[in-house]
Image 1 (cartoon, one colour):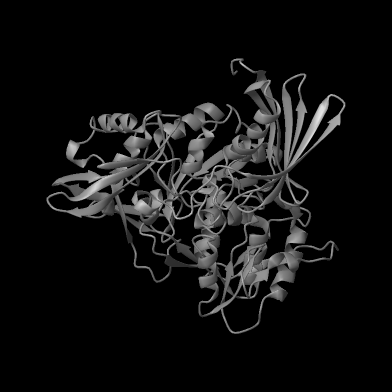
Image 2 (cartoon, rainbow, N blue to C red; image 1 turned 90 degrees about the horizontal axis):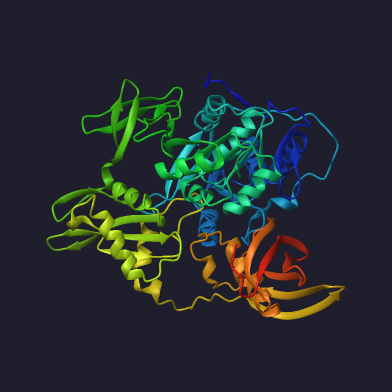
Length: 586
């Protein structure tokens, strides 16, 4: 594939071809181009060369990006959507404006007010960009928490998207769903640019709850899923066959354990394709795990070798023009044959504890391999003295573990089968969830906050209670219809780590904290829930939302239909069947 010629975006779309599905409505190629032209005309003309794009709706994100490029400007993509960080980006020299789809940001452009109003059909135009045109700067969060700027030219972004689409067989008409936000490089490439260059379409939402993802796959007839290990772990708990219609599942951003890859394949009938790369280098290699130490194969055009210290070196068309070739990576490798390799951990991930060397990645993987551990992360901290450093770990249990101290002792006992006692984690913190970012990554800074005293002794106490303000009831024959006004507290415990800068109420907390709580007080004759059916997550619920909860109680057959709405728009709905009080759960 030639990567040094001008790129003509949208050239693979017929005017009526679908570009985006879901959200408020599906959109075809003609409407996309009309919106691109309308937003491009609305962009400021003042001095500056960057537009910060922070749209959550993937279609509006694509419109903003294409409109910016059509004006010859660059896109700035921050590492997260925290309001303070976005405001800081907007104040930077050279920034024209911040384009968003509903955030409270001063001196910004809400893209929803500038979309095209004409519905006249027209042939979509082609957006032509030169290979050396600077398109975007991606800011990574990095393991240290420092934001690293990675400028990307068209040959790097569009060129890589074209290679990925061709290599992995993304076809016109395919539908792709990403659980990774579009402002992350992985979500930008696979979730937005790959479908745009392939003539495929993408789902506008970015769900990450397992049930919401499964629902979107079925509802939108998705062919390919783009996800990360942190999300894939939760998908192993879904009903078998939930991903049966998928042709491919991709994973990137962090190591995927062999156990999770095998569970996804066995439970859902589709193998996980892992893609290895970085923001600095672009994509490097791919594999499908089918055994211990399955080697990685370089992507087309990528050449790899090993330096004298055992580190990976990469020469690739996705590197910046001014990058020295080959690029030395921090990952240690073992070559397999002429051009395949096995990853052996990072150079900067090996530490000495009491004179003993240990790879933190290996320790973390051993924890993740334990059946009772749902998620885990480890790091080393300076302590001085003879030890120099000590290891700390945070783990998320898969189910109720009872007495935590005993469980932690069992974890350490299991680890002692693999590691010298001196390198075992000195402190293991058991938490409900890790404060991962929306792309599944966990920075060292945010991991260490779990061990700070302030994390356990908060100034503002967290609550597990929703605020119920009113209750009305109507009788419709044998059916009781109960309606509640509910406010979602900002300090609700369920928002912790779910997710930083983009807090969303988990589905399980909606069920337990709102639905089941009220059913328990309304219908004492209802016992344990027996079956959950027709569950749909249509809109995300955020801190401070004013909701209406409607419960239709059918006492005769122990059934409740529930609906959660915000401003009249449905958020969550479903049906719960119960056992009789004192009965045994099914």
